[in-house]
Image (cartoon, rainbow, N blue to C red; front, side, top):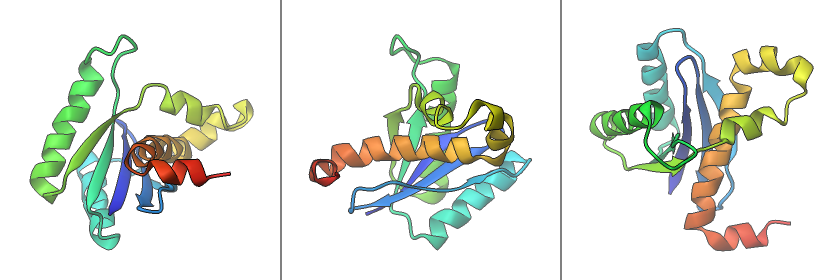
Length: 143
């Protein structure tokens, strides 16, 4: 199993990689200005890394309802299934971007946000949640 974690954004797409070892690792974010170019780059990453499963953040509302952003993620998941022919797992991503941003000093956040580092850290958190559910022993073995 080779998983690609995805934190979908309107300007950037955060990415992370993980496999049966159970550890998610951030990848460079897709920062192309055009959404079509980002999608083509995403397909390239999938091919290059021989991805078998996509793990997409599902931004539910805090009360667990499905809002506009969650519907966008669901539509994107359907598009990925159709175009890439891979399973897409939706994972609750509430507060992952906030958690990822909290690891960056305040003075550096604007610059770092534009680089996509925060987006890829959020994708890493999303993917790690998925891997922890899939491979619970890997989580217990971590120091």
